Length: 310
Image (tube, rainbow, N blue to C red; front, side, top):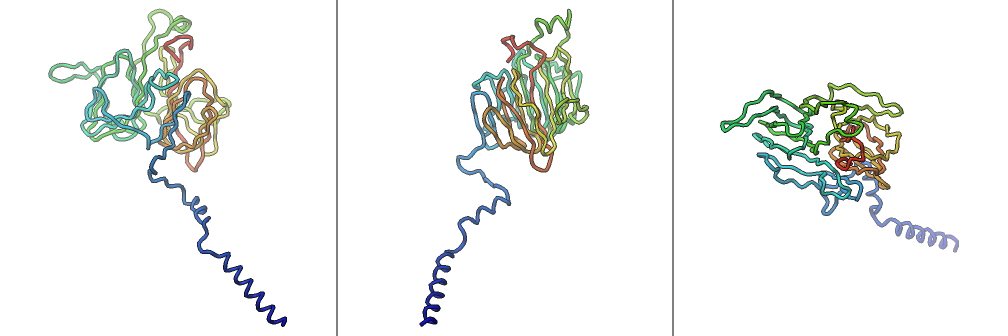
């Protein structure tokens, strides 16, 4: 009798155990996190976000169209004055096909070009004639990391024989006034045409911070803007949780990390673009195994009471 009960108990136990093994675990997919997330252009999915005081524009959201006055070029506009919060600059990516050439920006508008890929040539002080053009200065073979600043109403032309990807900023020039004009004195200089390469510039001291900083333009008072290239090693972050009147247009060129904008936190990676309105809370931390590098516009040397400045 005891043996029979034991056999029945064993059979019942096996039945219970068998009932608990329905096949592959529904949680097996959890381990896939170690292989990395692959979104594969999921329908309707985007990391982009547009808010009153900031925007994150990621590659899957870019819309390309023809670019006014340019030949064989398409552009995706990231930042324009049409946005809520009123940015006073434009920021866009220009994709130039082989044989492409640029047009001029709007009157009174400076242009800053950063080469992300490919190769371009720049003609400076171009005097157009019926038969073509003659340039007082020509710069060939500008590749990734090169940049060029064209002052407002400065004649120029950008061409490429093999194609190029350019990050471009444009903004109406704000001349010095008030205390800035007094500091400069009579007959103030104006910003000049400039070509350079990021890696040729020294790092600038950043007391209280750990990131590497390069300023691409001169810091003298005639300039109403500068462009900073900022480098973070993995684990480094901004110490200051910034809130200020300056507006920003940023592209992450290398690496990945987390960006705080207002009360939102965003995972970001190379290729992402961020617009920051004045006074939005902003903070960045670099993650991963490689350095982060981004380029960022910062308006400068102008009193914020000026209604033409942010």
